Length: 184
Image (cartoon, rainbow, N blue to C red; front, top):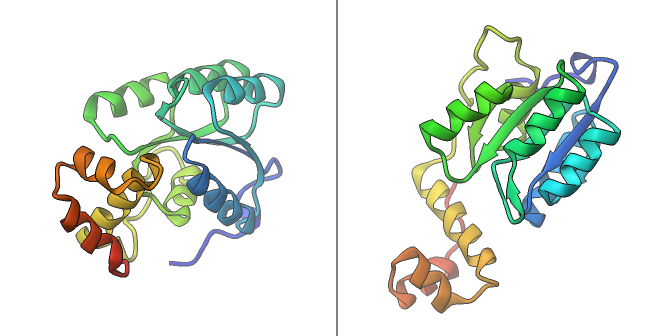
């Protein structure tokens, strides 16, 4: 599928990214910038709310669970300050209840992590009634598992024993997984 052209974005290209996963935030910002968006980043609810209040963006991608609270608080401020803003809520903890809450508050779409920049762009730019097309080449189950393990490993400050405990797996098994290349 072809990537959306910069002119599909519209005259206001402002995009707020709110996520406490620093490596993911930087990768997403770079990818979205290549697609023509003008990026502002925040890693906390407080920073996201401050940007949404001072300079409400045309688009936003907000993580649901942040270190200092719930990303839906940022979505509420965006809806108050700029009702036409298109908001996609991301989360690593996908559940029907949170998806319903996000959409009721005014999110345009709801995606589970790991989501790539193309999926996010499609969700941001889709018209209201039509669903974005399914991904052309979705990640394999092995790749999703690998991404999850890597995320938990990073959140545990690259501590193998703590990561293994949190993933409920043997430490040696985790070490073997981490030693291999990522699946496609």
